[in-house]
Length: 474
Image (tube, rainbow, N blue to C red):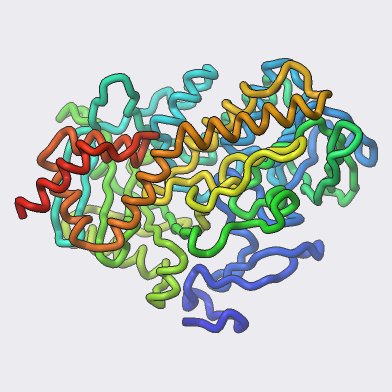
């Protein structure tokens, strides 16, 4: 493996090796040693410390002045935009802060799962799904070549809708909805830090694209600034969880019509997962973007990537090679980008004095599936719903924030435990093979596994027994 202190030749270093650096403004940043790009980013965030920010639009006219708002949301990805939209609809004065201007791309698999779809429908924002077909089937390959191909299951009382929407489009839709609801557009400026709480507010320091600084006093600051959260660092003392709780994924786009809907055959779009020995306990994926394009990628825990001396780019190339050997058409890979995935296993404290963390900033990512959008959007909506009618009383607000965290953890506790147990099983090829056989031959096992990976379900005893039956039948 490449020495972390030595700049690597392009394409030669493992993707996860990063070194401390500074951006052109002198702010600390992270540089990918493979391609030299600052803060590839991930989830719904806004980058590393000094790169997170706010500005643009109305902010320029007020540069250098203090502006009081009820809620300052740092990070305008799905979690932050939903929080800003819901808060603005409640009549709260909201500032939505992000270092980027929209539209902008974000590295992701582009899958929009049942939890995220549910929030979209609750807020009446599901028009972003218009014209897109629901994923109809899923193919899974196991470590010994096992193959499972099934329709996306129907689970009584639960949605299993999965869509694919590029983040360039999805994130802009949510951002514009928040601004339309009344949130102040502070895109294009950087979050520099905050102080407080004192005097009934926190003071957020920002810098716009021109370099002008301003402060913003907020009754509540919501950190939704992604995997490299600067707000998290200010609140918790570090901007990311320990390495053992981090994953890394690399995605690319390519031409392929093998996964599009086939109107003549009356079949909908399909998605594919491969749990190969090389990728366990994670997987490779294909999501159909539509129009003959796919999102293709791989993921792996960072600790295992380093232990094995692997290169995430080579893992992606090998995965695509295996697909082609199976007769799957995958065109030339484009826009290869990587990002870190802070797993929910390392979720930090969420509620603080006049502040809260949600989304990737709070490590809200399923350690098995890599799904994070649903957790982030759900947490955002629940956080705003938990707020008191007035935010002036610090004790009442802090009690509401503590209640939000308590309820979120309690409601997801068994789900998180199930994900952790499944992650442990998938570290070994034999259990992974058994699971693939079970979901192919047992619809109820398929329902349970699907709900845990793409919803908020848990591993029920009956599901475990059904999976175990297939181990004994080997």
